[in-house]
Image (tube, rainbow, N blue to C red):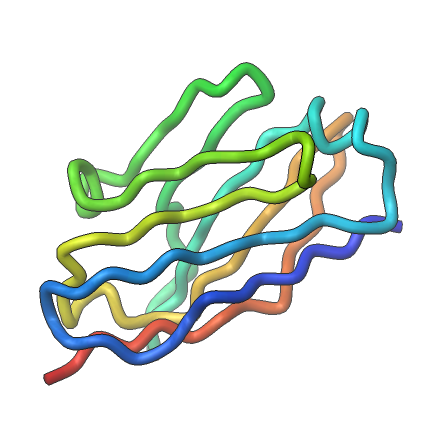
Length: 118
């Protein structure tokens, strides 16, 4: 069974950067390579929303609110997806979740907190 573990969250001042990682385990590397990986976030009192996705072929999709500031990437050798977050804003404060979708099923990570505050 696939497990996703996010890391890299923390507290940062506005304008700062963080890099989130999502490591997948419990399944073959071929499964990871075939999957679409995504980052989502949920702020207090709000619904979970899409941040960015990256397909198995490397095509990316971003929410309008993060375009030009965030970059999603993946390493199929390391079974890991990343989210580089630059020019962070207070409104980026949320719990960030990783999601793997493959062969009609999906798995969520446990989330990592990102707080942007001065």
